[in-house]
Image (cartoon, rainbow, N blue to C red; front, side, top):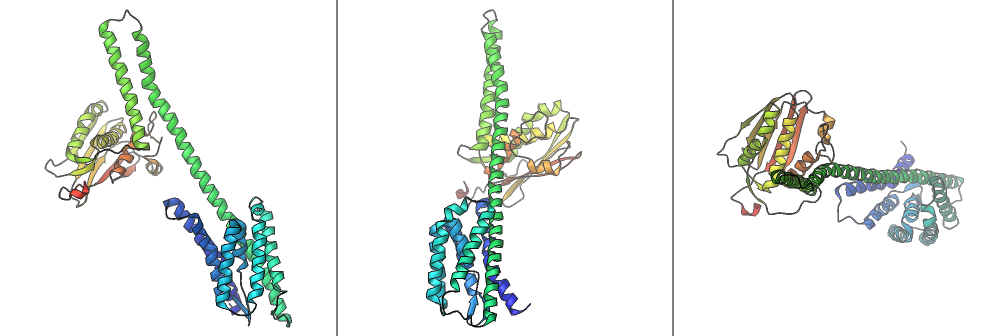
Length: 427
């Protein structure tokens, strides 16, 4: 590769490199929601492109130095408007002044003129299809190049220099077309990303609405039926009281369902307390023993009562999370089996609860979606229980790891930060 080709490649990469950095920067900003990132910061990338272009020009024949600075100037003004254009123009003029050399004032006038032209058509440009955008940007590039040949001192006494100048025009136009195509592709990808995330949010909202309607509708329908029955005065007092009790239980169930959704969506801050994991596991096993017997499931526990296993959180919410996971494990064994629960407090800073069942298991795709709204492996399930469980454990600073194999069972690891009783600041 000769020197000319090297200079050409480096100069063109000076235009493209900031473009790719801009894409990476935008994606990181979008994913991690950096609050310190402001819109105006994206102007840094065309500025960087201009500085690189002017720092690494194409040195054809001294004192003729050519570069692609017009491309970021014109595109930045077309997409960013007159404010961006004024900023980029000031950068070009400043760098050009610092570099020195001949034809400073002619360059000054040319770039002011082309910036004004680009700013005037900016609002028109942004509404047009890609084909017209290419024509407008290429036209402005050619216009600036043609005008630059009319300002002395430019050495066109030799035919070689004229050929180089014409070649430079062609390269600038080709570079502009490539850059604008890449810019449009990147912007289309950004728009598709926004639409995809918005569509996913709407889908989740629809699923949650359907789930709420179904889950709350059942107890409310049952309550309405019992209230209608109570209108019959011939019903004995004992039966009437029984109906009232069942109706109240159904309403309590509806309230619990609403609380579950609120826990997932926007949990209310409550005072945290020390939770003794050993007791919570025992409580969960006690609550679910009747269900385990119905499903012919044997629950085995491997716990050491003297272990000083404490975590910090809301006791009721943690109980709810643990019971949801244990209940799912039991229900995954319709033909019976064993549910093994163990507790490991040997870690310096973490506590691990291990739950292993012999159920139907899950595929990798199902594991990846576990805890998502409205995802469930059960025929009549809503996915609400696991969704809430994952949310609660996450708020406690922990995580749930899942391994599973179809036909062999599922392995849950609940990892929580250990509460250090000697450090009061941890409370």
